Image (cartoon, rainbow, N blue to C red; front, top):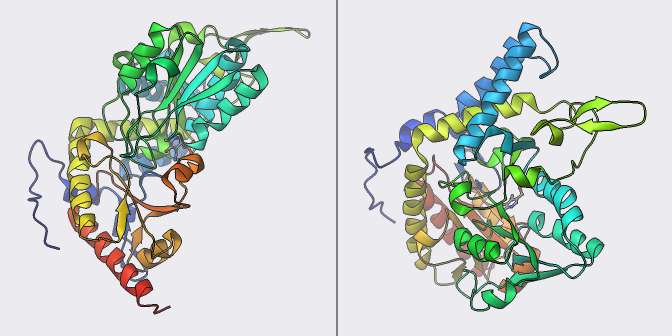
Length: 423
Ligand code: PMP
């Protein structure tokens, strides 16, 4: 395939060649060929500035936070709180106090399930979610529903990978206590109309959680515009380190929540018999936090903001359009998710009946191409799609159309290899 798209940088286009130089890992080889990293929905690579922020912390001012009057402790506290403010501004939270550090999206959702839902969901209530949720935004609600005697209801997935909203008015009803929905599907790429869904949920008095694990890294996300109560996301998918994520929660909802973990740091007054809780957000952050990685996430946000989230989104739409067109050449390959690149993120799942997804992954790896294969932690959705596993290419700021060409050529090779029976 020839590269038809002009790649010259302009103020509306990312300068990908320059960006790539900031990511040391992108210059390595895999199986003797250049790495083509297309597994960004699983985790992103890290720019040098993020890696350096960790080194700077450990070499220059490593110390525990919120506890000491000594210089290092104050420097560490300031850096971590600055990072919190950056995260808050990034998603347009009302205040940094609305940002709770967590390990990842999964933990953020569990903080809500244990700290809010266990108190506020009652027998007979309904929790509405969708048929395309990651296990992290499904299993906690199964548990809440079981323990509280509530019912789980699902907005189904239509054949094109979008949400089927034809029954939305009966599914979101006066019985709905919580709406919890993924903004961008990790298995289909679908971008869901979270703002409209949140408005419907609010109209019936329900609380709203948005799983932003895939959306926050790749598009502008504004919690006040969506008008959600909770937004959960992970640092490692947005150029930051593993082990750090965040829960945004509306201030008045945080005031009604119980902490999931109790102990040091989250208390104000402790006697032998009792304890009172600290102010927000520390009430929800028991024990020593992940200081270094929070600072690293702040550096990642600096990097993303310097590029511009609209530009990032635009770049990924171009790559997705290019990939969807390229895959049309491969008749025996099904591509999942909405056909319109504007309606989806940079996630391209594909499957061929003639090659198992894991074999695709192995052949692609020989060509240096890293994709994810499997059920992508969405087993119920895979059953709906009627496949056990797909291969999934997912893009980010440093990917190029040339890399999409390598992917598609490698897929052609896998199809040739397996249809020839040349195993
Ligand atoms: N939700 C979605 C949509 C995801 O893509 C992921 C990660 N694949 C998660 C939740 C869970 O994220 P983490 O593993 O970082 O907790």
